[in-house]
Length: 501
Image (cartoon, rainbow, N blue to C red; front, side, top):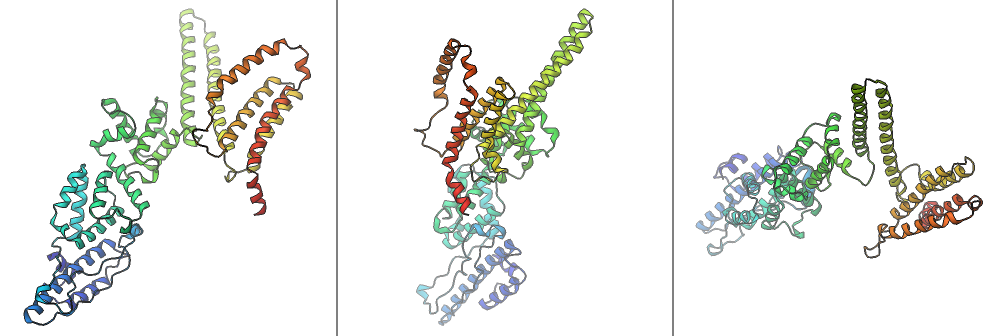
């Protein structure tokens, strides 16, 4: 324990009072809120030297037949010296060990064991052993064989220092090894004072770093639900890792975007690392890159990354079709000598490319509009009244197209889209139901098909002038309006609370 004497700048023959004075002098230079790690080393050295001086004074008193004076305990700061992570452990530093009784007898003299190694070095050794040993059983056996942990007091102190250091600097560690450390140092219990939320965050961070180790690619592939038995899967994992480690640039988007399944693979890779908690990704992963590709892989909403990736794919497909059309025309011109086919091919290719891009824009707009309509009433998306009155406005547009513009085909298209939007709005804003009572839209497809076939057989048999006398569009517009009114009636309490507020 020479390191403790050197840190306190005292000699081995110092008494208890000298130890306290040296500790008070150094405590003015090393404060817990400024240098947490230095304060931990100083406090550990103070405890060791104080226990040594107390035990030496007690032994001298027993030999001389006089009672050893009681060693008063020095108050320690009522906080865990862990810097910004001190909130993760709600505990206080323990009082100095080895306090002798006021009237000891030779038969009852108890000298507490003194740790003869540096606590920081011991914590680093335990962490290194947990990183190297992927087997939690081997780690448990190694911990039980260390003589430094045979003292309960030392074991508790090292456990707190270990957890504080892991909170400040997470390490690549499997969950089983972290559970072994928590169980060995009695930190998995509620009474230990460990914040469970901070501990879960630490577990995810260390597991993400552990997955990125080269020899853990099989475990990462299993978590991504892909096989790692052949080289192609390993190459895919390596390609995803190289992409996410590179700096974020727009030039790196087109090539992964046009490759089949690469966007979904990148999204699975990121989800396998952090489980969707992007803030807990390892430091070697570029967070901007990861956030872009993770949002691009999500299919539930039309986010900006997904729109960008889809636009790149649509543009690439349009260029391929346009180039193919022009190539065929050039081949015809080369064989026949007629150059007019090239101009016609250019026009045809431009029309095909415009149609592809237009279809993609319609699909992206529909996805965004469907999610926007399905937002709950408590959402702060603006404008609120436009979102509420969109379905009645579309119904009025369909009726106007039929009666004023005399365009029944366009009116039927608008009315059909409005009906689908009203149904999905009602479904998205409905409260969740048990799985046994949840209705599936796919189960009703046979009935809808039978109804369409029956109507197709009945309509031709009607009188030719009958459809002109029946306001079919107006009658059809009542269906989405009824669904919209039912949805608004179900959320009427929200309007009442807002009006009273």
